[in-house]
Image (cartoon, rainbow, N blue to C red; front, side):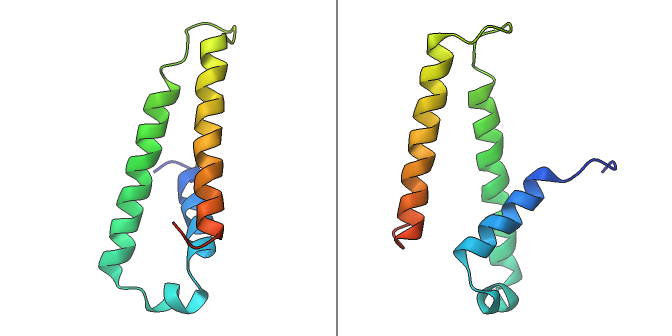
Length: 87
């Protein structure tokens, strides 16, 4: 890997810290950690694929905005579920 920051790895670590206690992270089975990382990166790849479906060019269209708003709403819903222990 290059000298570029590992943005997704940083986000994964932040998410893990939100979802697990330090003790849970310390004692987590390596296979579970690998599975979590794989699913996180698969999700990031899927998200990027969705973002790549926006309209070409530099002008933001109503369709682009609707896509972003739908993604934000879904992520917000997940965040609330996560905080409430439902996710």
